[in-house]
Length: 278
Image 1 (cartoon, one colour):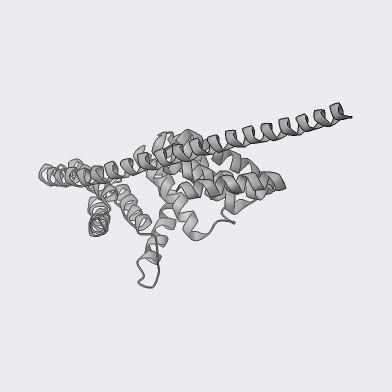
Image 2: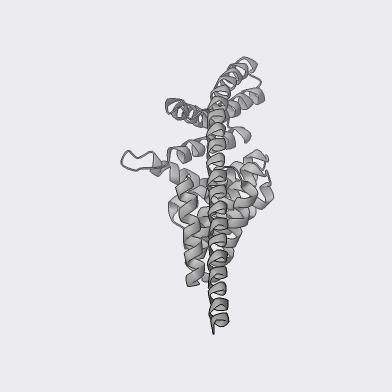
């Protein structure tokens, strides 16, 4: 990770020397990713926005899509600013002629996830065709897809159909999400699917089934929390390593300044000595 930061800063330094806006934007984006990884979200947003400004000026649509997605994710997952997240995701979808199918579904998943969190089920409806088309393609044995995205699609469809009163269909999709998440020990996805399934049973008035899924949710969430604690410890370790790198970098810069000052002073003394000698 420290090497990634070092390379990104080196790229930024060289790009500014060359006045190359493409590389400057790429460097800011990489630094933003590094900040997001260690949960320095305000710093990440600042760097992403610098990269976005340059990418928009260059009309680099593919790069713009990546930045919109990252800014949308921070707005949604960290800031809980769903309105701003929606703006970023929709901006990405407006570039439909430039967006690859896999990127498009990711924007749709993120958007629909937030709509369901806000109980805006009607806003999911226009995207059902895209979601189900993706799912049809994803279930083909010869097609490689991102497992997390696949589980999220089952989750979205399960929650959507459950919210619209089609409980059997909703439970069916959620059961598949639960099975995939449990098999692959993806506890965050698993806990979310169990919770959604419990809520559907509550709506149906099936208290026993709701309680059962709620207990499963608690177990899955505990496993997720254990993983999160380990991740948090890793993040803190990375933060410490970065701070050490920055401290050494500042010390090196100070040493260079001192060396430059001494060299300049020595040169000045030599000049004075020559003048005095004459």
